[in-house]
Length: 242
Image (tube, rainbow, N blue to C red; front, side, top):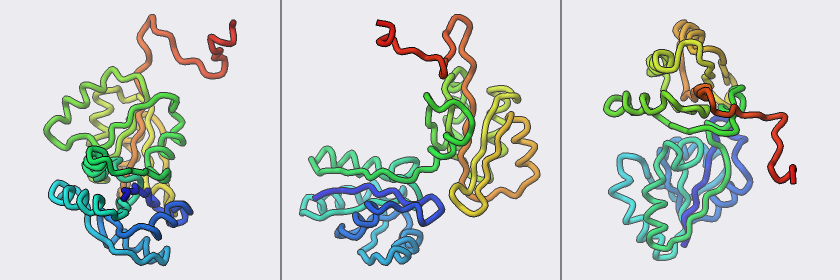
């Protein structure tokens, strides 16, 4: 018995790993956020396996049944529509219950949208905080207020119809000249990475029809006076001085 968490391509289907393919070929069944979306990938890979729905609207109702199947000796693979299960997608509840029941869980490495967006943003990535999707209504202002003093690069997921609202809120909170980047359609034909001050990003995207899921990276606050700033090229480990 084992649960496999299998990352799937965030756009380009060629980003599937050989290990992911072998795992999907070997399991008894595949749990999918959207069986139609995952079905396209499985057909592309010529994999035929039982495919069952597992998404945010049914995970609480199905998790115990799935744990029961695993206890009976089945192997299951969990995939999301794109990226790594559990990262702003269903997965946490099932993993937690498997751990409680001593069921082995194995997560394969693979695609996740925030990593390429962060790395090519041009913002510091030695330390960062991944915030995922901000709350839509309740708790949104509280979360934003908590980030006002954040010195690490901040990474967010956002949908197209909320992008301008979110960028404007960031500008109001962090300052219109705070550096940021917006990545959309990652790994796809029309991938775009737009970088600059928040004010420029707002003006740019206000003139565009926005499609595809988005990743926003925002520069952290400059360290307060008296705090040591981060040094990159001339860093020396304490051990080297001995």
